Length: 372
Ligand SMILES: C[S@@+](CC[C@H](N)C(=O)[O-])C[C@H]1O[C@@H](n2cnc3c(N)ncnc32)[C@H](O)[C@@H]1O
Image (cartoon, rainbow, N blue to C red):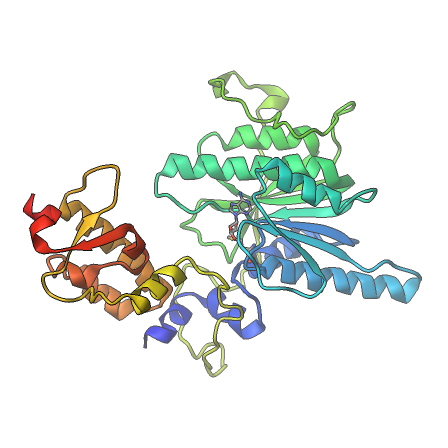
């Protein structure tokens, strides 16, 4: 039951596994291409924030198609794809991988080094921060990723090239649009139908790279300012309304709808995820759980929270309950999750989150926070 619940809930997740994509995000890039033709004539591309690699898979497929077409009419050079992410990524044939932070100058230099004397036709960035839940903070980090991606792009993209990046349509997004318009005459905001309507996520599609005359790319980030900015003062070219394009025709499934497993006359078969995480963050906690001689679930075992800030047991329980919910989501155990959320007052041993274990010291009841 739990195994198929995500398949029921998310048709793009299901289809990704059926079609061999590492993530449902592949459909976003394919739908953007369907509307905006971003792969036309592309031979060299960079995939920023690429893990687990479904966009790289799409790039690999599309660039190889271009290569084959080019070979039919004459000579052609094999495609070049460079993929970068903070996380390690399982290898993909024909994709050069770099593990690093795109906001870091060293990583940017490593990417640029791969394009020594050559230039990319396309740079894509699907970068997303680990969501903190602090809305403004998440939006800010997202915009920093986009600006870091743009900064790297100014070093490697050929004039006329295309840049596609995830953007959060939030307050002040027009400032980002204005910055992009400095470098690209055509800036669109694309919303693929595989991207949930409930999400503020969209993608900027920037075409025909034309840096301002005399612009020299450098590794300082000239686009960021810590000065307070009054957006009302932005007028003319500085305040730009970007066209909004919905990608994917009306026949495409709606990403916010639950579809039956047997769908469109096709009998449902369960598929394992195409590429399991190679170093998931919960691995350490699982190992801890297996190795530890301590029985975390034993009655009377309590915890001291290893934290700079004293935390009450009820606060800890609340935090643990939220983490447990995330773990449950990951494992697709909807039924179990429902049960857990109904059991607010259950013994702490039942709501101990796996990924919090390494933050905990086990002690006896007398020294626990509960007794303080
Ligand atoms: C939504 S996932 C990308 C999915 C990918 N496009 C695919 O199709 O498989 C976002 C990725 O951004 C990466 N990321 C976030 N911040 C980053 C940074 N500063 N530098 C490099 N990668 C980053 C994360 O590690 C994560 O793998």
